[in-house]
Amino acid sequence: MVEVSSSEPAGASGSADRGDGWFDDVYRRHWDGMVRLAFAMVDDRAVAEDLAQDAFARVYRARDRVRDPLPYLRSALYNGCRNHLRELGRRRRRDARGSAIDAAGTGGAAAVGDHVMDVVRRLPTRQRCLVVLRYYEGLTDTEVAAATGLPLGTVKSTLHRTLAALREELS
Image (cartoon, rainbow, N blue to C red; front, top):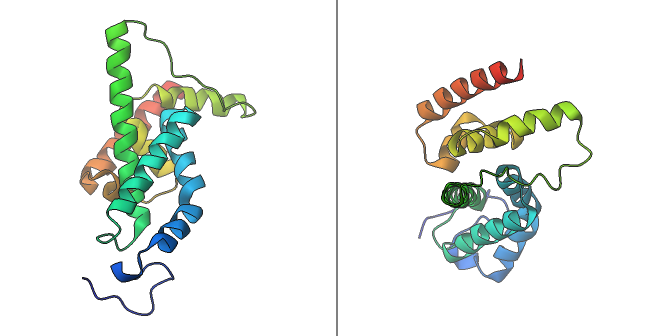
């Protein structure tokens, strides 16, 4: 077990304190944010909730090994969203429908914001996820790299190229 200093926030101590109360606290504090993050990536509220639930289940199962649940949650959620979007793409190619992702739940946003989100939704999965994590969720490049498991240089270069393509598309 890893030694933990007493200066850590409540709920961040070692596995001996990681009972259901610890998980309940993590769940209450992070549920809404994780669902919003997943929704920004997959654009379907029900799927976003399912993916968030899966990420929380992973944290619960790994609670004895996880010091800080938020980066673990983000990483699990990113991987779940990425896998979901890959499968969705496979299904769409197989069915040859090419239908767009349902935009339910975005009503009320400005027309410019809608146009930007439409362009972001058309990005390849990796690029879309990186843009959402960096600019929608507000993570630093380092946090995005940790959440996705990608090298920092890859995150930076991919975001740079993606933003250039977005600027071109939106101009």
